[in-house]
Image 1 (tube, rainbow, N blue to C red):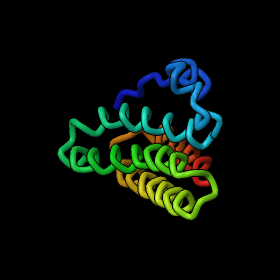
Image 2: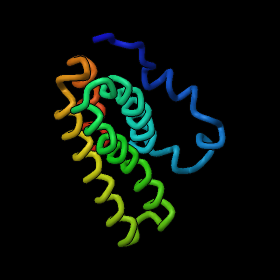
Image 3: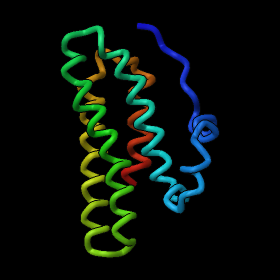
Amino acid sequence: MVIRDELSFEEWCHTVPKQLQSDPLWLSVYYQKSLYLYDLAWSDCELLKPDFRGREIIQQLIRSAGGICANLEEAYGRGIGSADYIRVVRIALGEARETQGWYFRSRRLIPEESISRRYDLIAEIIS
């Protein structure tokens, strides 16, 4: 299995459009890291595609990884501290845990070092 080059979080931040970086939500590190995780998951799907079992995982992995940042965006739009904000942030937390589970199920097709880095990143988002 080929290990591809991937940008560090700091390098990746420099690729994010200024329009996103100027949004107040960008100040939240957990939001930044959830967008970074989504980009990593997108690339990881390339490693899953060749195997029929991996293709079954792709849809779930990309949906749950995307759900983290999407729910954070929705929560922010509902007003920080509101009951609805808290409810939607909890959904984002659930998506993070689901993504962690899909990475576990992907461990036979994605290099161990990459899986370990994904677990660490997801743990940062969850905390």
